[in-house]
Image (cartoon, rainbow, N blue to C red; front, side, top):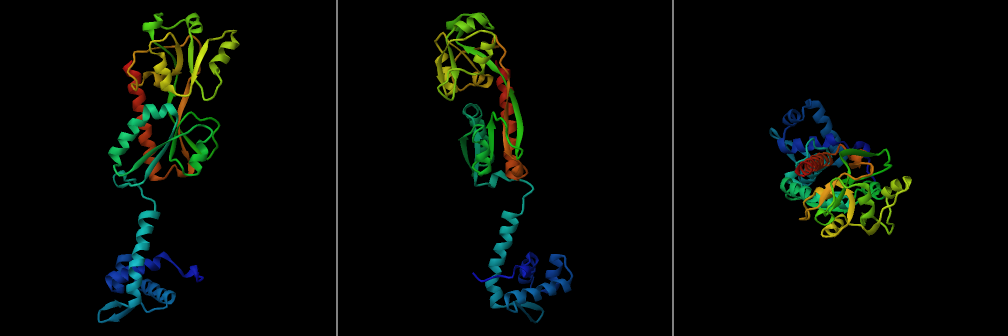
Length: 312
C-alpha cells in the first residue's frame, strides 16, 4: 500500500470538499461551515495539494468540479456518513430502527421467569432486532462480557473485578415448597417435619449437599436429600403429588410457568437471602444501546418481581 502522509489529512478538509461540491461557491461553503472565506480557501489549497488536482475551477460565478472531484465526491459523502452515523456516539438509542442483536446472559431460572417478558418487550420496541439468551454464571460472566459475546448478564455473581459494573435488581429469598394436599402439614412447616420429609435440591454437580446442609450440621442436624437436579422446573414437577419438600428461590416457586398448587412458606431454619444482579462492562456502561437495554431489563424484572410477590 502506498504510504500516506496522514499529517496532511484532516476531517475538516472532507467537510470543505463536500460543501464546495454541493454549493459550488467558496462564500456559500464558508457560510455552511461557519468559516471565514480565507479559511475555506486555505482548506481548498490543502485539498489540491493532497489530491494533486485543481478539484474546483471558477467558471463564471461558480466553482465547477473537475473530473477528479466528480470521482471523489460520492466517496467523501460515504466517509462523512459513516463517521456521523456509525462512529460518532448517538445521544439516544433508537430501538425501532435497530437491526442487530441483543445478547443477554442469564441463569437458568432467570431465563425461565424473566425471559418471556424481556423477549416480548424487545420484539415490540425493536421489531427488527434479534434476541439471544446465553447461559451465564460467575465463572464465565466476565469472559463473555470482555469478549463482547454478551451485552449484559443477569444472575448471582461473586468476586467480580473492578472493571465490571453491577446493578442491583432485587433481593431473592428461599422458601419451602411442597404439595400440601399430600403433605397435609401445618403452615409454616416445622423443623421436625422438614427434616424427616424426603427432599429435592438443585445442584450443578453430583453433590447432594448445599449450604443448607452445612447450616444444619452446625446444629447437629441432618436432612434427607433423595434427588438432585440441575433444573428448577424439574423440582416443581417432581413435588406435585409426592410427599417431598424443596427449598427454592421465591421467584421460582411463585412463577406461573407450571400450573400447580404448591404451598410456599418460610423455612424452619435460617437460610440467607441473596442478590440478583445485572452486570455490564464499566467501559461499555455509557454506550446508548447498552444503557437503554440495561434500564429496560431492570424495569421489567423489578416489575415482574413485584407482581409475583403480590399474587400469592
